[in-house]
Length: 473
Picture 1 (tube, rainbow, N blue to C red):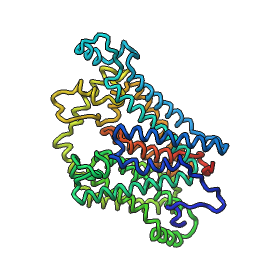
Picture 2: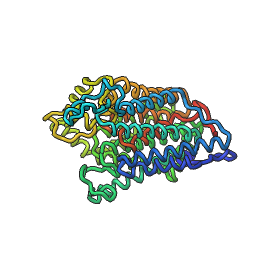
Picture 3: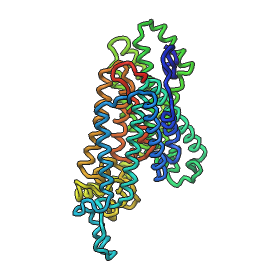
């Protein structure tokens, strides 16, 4: 066992993977997705959608030219994708004036009265233009996920993409640390107008960057555990295993643990209390699931000891760098948090239109109709992806999206229980738990770079033939 566990290697005689335009477009999205302020902005929605469409078309043409069928998609993921696509189509219907005229949002009737236009045609959505943009973004995510599923079918592609993701995490974390210790005055070439006391890297919001970093921490941890499990399952003597363990970590094997520590320190410096909590919950799920799969005896004892060492290092970093996060936890209970004034108003908005919602992506406009004097801050997003989704598209469509995430989670868990090579599937489980916890009180999944990172980690973890050698199709 050598450092090759941490770096890509190719077995002699194995057919080399063909990495065409589709693969490199996907690589470009992974590398540059977080650069333009996390991908926020209408222009990036169109750019990403165009790149994904070109990549999919290129992949399909390449498969046809080579006479090969498309890699199969597991039925839970196919159903999940279909559910999300249906909800995106529902968002387009909400944004189309004239549809369901009798159920149009009341704001259109008020607008018609004030404009003196009795024949003003309304829509279900209070902000149709936002609904069309968000629906386009959702279709882009579906295309991105399809690319990951197809391209990560090869084990070499899957390993490359996950290690590339870790490299990207390290670069953005180093940039964020450099800016933070240099005065924290800018994001790229823009003047920083908020979160001037915490690390945000190229993201505007610290909580969104914390979610992105958490996915990096979990990915690095999964790679380390995969190496340890393979080393622990080796029948060679403890002395031989220890020698090769040292050889690995004095060679290139130190890179992944260093990325983990780098991302964790950056996560602490974001000061995001729920970002840290969600990451730790996801890490616990990953560690417990991994330890539970180890065979009883020396392997589990040795593995538990190493896990204790790893947890000790994380605690040490928290003690050294986590004061800012602890202060924010204290302020939560002493000064309160404005989002907890918003949630009851969101529930009122949901109650007023429980089936049709106020429109996909229309939170900012819809919230103005229900906010009161108690809310002093500006809220363009709901700080709870669950409540905002229900408020936007209604209960039936929101439940369809929740079911889609549940189907992906169930598939990943089943693979992690059945297969011998289970770390990537456990990573998918842990990543879903992480974003699910954080989504309860924030909007990180509405940030394109975060959603793409989540889809990459999860779908790469469950792509390929279940419980068998990875195919070289």
